[in-house]
Amino acid sequence: MYAIFYPGLLKNKNSWRYLLIILLLVTATKVSSQANTEVFLIKLEQTEDTLRPGNPVNISNNPGYDNQPSFYNDNLVLFSSTRNEQTDIAAYALNKDSIIWKTNTPAGSEYSPLKIPGSQNFSAIRLDQDGKQLLYEYNWKTGRSQPVIKDLKVGYHLWFNEDILVSAVLVENRMDLVVSNLRDQTNYTFQKNVGRSLHKIPNTALISFISNEDHEMILKSMDPVSGATRIITTLPEGVQDMCWLIDGSVLAGQDNQLFRYMPGKDNSWELFADFSEGEIGTITRLATNAISNLLLMVAEIPDN
Image 1: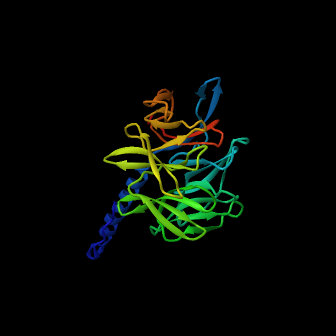
Image 2: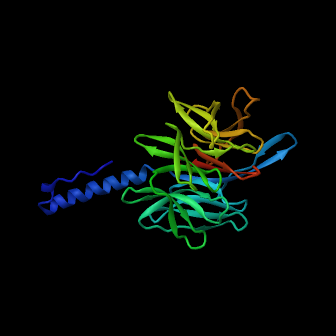
Image 3: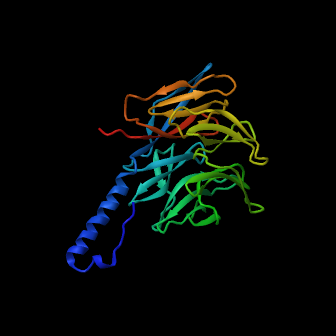
């Protein structure tokens, strides 16, 4: 939504009041359009040949927007969280059940934090109030930041290794899959019109992405060095996000249910967990730790 300014509008006090009302309505619409989401932690328990999910635990407990979680390590979870009308990066410690804030940027908001391989630092996308959007590296101890890539409007990203970055880059009205070699400062576009979910495929040298083709979300693999791609499967209707488990299976959330698919074995997605009772609404993000015994899940909170 945009506010339109007419030069002749502000000739009297009543006009100023009208403008103030318009601006308040615009702000209220913007704030209310952002869903109330929470980050949940779920233990995954392996019993013989069966993987069972535990009960979801709300680790963000914050009114408003909490999203895009990732594991910094097996004890720390990074996620974006709203405070003081902006979005900063928070870190949740499992062993202490406590949260510390890792960024505080008054002129912008940060999203999608990821630990940088071979470093204590993390990366996050920052959207400044002037519309500038870049991927930054943040010092873990000081919080100081510097751009990772200065000429790409990164929407979502994945570290393949410390030198190769895979990104969904905003181009016109779509996102393109771009592989950047930070060592030689090159960027290659391998696929157009992709989704937000980027992951490394366990026990391979491949990554996965979602291709938006004729309104179908197709999960594909890609070699980030050669660019070779392969179709894995079609995602369930309405699903835009997924994650991999260490056994090579895929989890995806649809409404308030989780589904699982094993490439090369399953013919269809199978129900993995049902959260229809409780505080879980639509599931929008998923992430696991390296050994897949912990699952992060973002879900909307239903109105009471």
